[in-house]
Length: 339
Image 1 (spheres, rainbow, N blue to C red):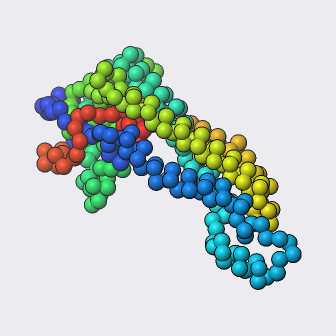
Image 2: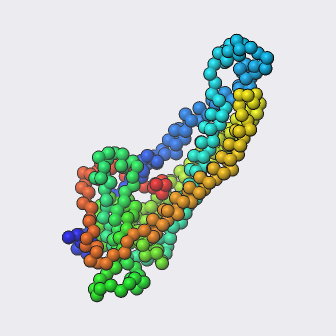
């Protein structure tokens, strides 16, 4: 029989915290890495613009209407196989969608997440509870893959902050809340402070994890705020570059013979993509992402009686050797907000 551990076990004193998500944001040089990783794509797209610039002057795009088959064949072989301007346009539009979605994420999701995390420290009510770390490495044979793609989560169990709003239970029963939370401390903890937002009894989060999260971008020495700003500059450059490139490709398609490039179709596709698809996916997708995250953070979980909590399966405590395999240190970054 498992026990919730309210005062039954000694609290483990440890300063180990989870490293930031290494795939999305290494601990050092992440902005530079993002910039360098986009250079190959930038080179390819500049090359596309160069090809588009040369396209109207190619002999194969200026074949007279009365030319015979032999002349057409010779001219086409002379210029060689060409990448269609329409294919280039698809590349620019796809890139515009991706960078616009990332830009909206940085300007919609991240600020709202910071705001609600601040509310925990400013308005939250503290109750006692336990946190049981659930090591994802033990659930998958691809342990290196899990530490890159999956955050560290734990099961938190704490006393309901307002049991008067719940149905009357058997005498002596205590109402308990159980939920999954993101954690930065990779071990079990008992009898610790859990912060709950007013009027949201299922919003409990370990206070220590909230403080680690806020400290990543609030303290004087934290650099994640500057990193976010620098990433926003990179994203803004790409949005304007892909949008201007799209317009330039349309202009070049207008210059060539309609028999080779369908300018009217390209214009319709571009207008629909820029005016409808990009705003719908970038804003709508991030709004759905934020709504689901907020609901998970503040309204997910189960309300149980004290007897029901005894049947909860507690994950096994991770050993020091297992935790030592986790790369990184305690210097968490604001990129943890992005996963």
